Image 1 (cartoon, rainbow, N blue to C red):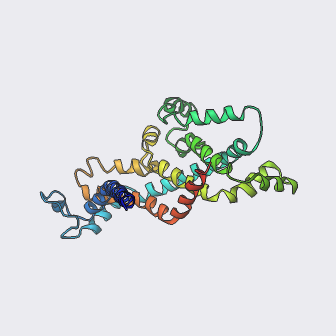
Image 2 (image 1 turned 180 degrees about the vertical axis):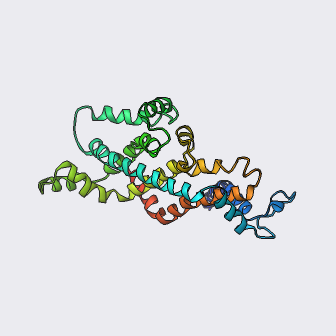
Image 3 (image 1 turned 45 degrees about the horizontal axis):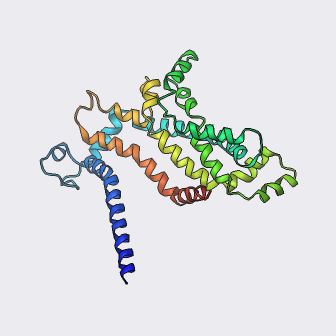
Amino acid sequence: MAMQQRTLAFRLFRHAVLTAGALLMVAPFVLMVSISLKSPGEIFAPEFQLLPQQWHAVQNYSQAFAKQPLLRFLLNGVFVTACIFAAQALFALPCAYALAKLRWRGRETAFVFVLLALLVPPQVPAIPLYIGLWKLKLLDSYAALILPSTISVFGIFLMRQFFKTVPDDLLHAARLDGLSEFAIVWRIMLPTAMPALVAFGLLSLVWNWNDFFWPLLVIQTDTLATPPLGVVFFNNAEAGTNYGPLMAAATVITAPLVLAFLLAQRWFIDGVTMTAVK
């Protein structure tokens, strides 16, 4: 009886901690949406109310699209993140397959370098990449946003961990049928690894959609700005302290990430769970 009570108390404590953490994470987004629905008078009112007394959503969201080309920022984000993910998958799948299923000298050493590369912050190679793009005259272009992120070390690691769970008998059967190693990657491993690829795709989408540091360095033209950089354009003399349209723009830019996760959450959870088996 005492053991059951301790187990119940631990579960209640665990759920309380998780609930408090979830509320702490969600609170800024709730506040963002709340401000985007309010008039300036209610935003700066001394007392806080979650829901507005007078809804000002139409004005705020209309001003958000009128002050800056918000739709162009969204399209830039979709184009850049889609190109980056396609290139990352193109490189990650063969590399992960070679590290997981092929036997060759130096394989374990190469995997160690992959793990070490995970420890390198993206700010470290920023200056060499910037100089290289400047010499190639690619600054202030879509290529400057896409090329530095085309190879994802984390993607290689994640897909390698998933490929380790695929039975070798499946690959032996494919080789007996006459498939080459590249054909095995794209015709056997890719459909099998779809949950892990979706999980990596969501992570890649979040990282590259929210990336502010690199676009700030390489982009000077407003029409090439990605969503986070576009939000900064609202914080200027034109927008002033008009936080309603600013929070409306932030809500519009955050919404695609939430929608993407809600649509693919089952695959995301399956992919992350299956890659953690080994």
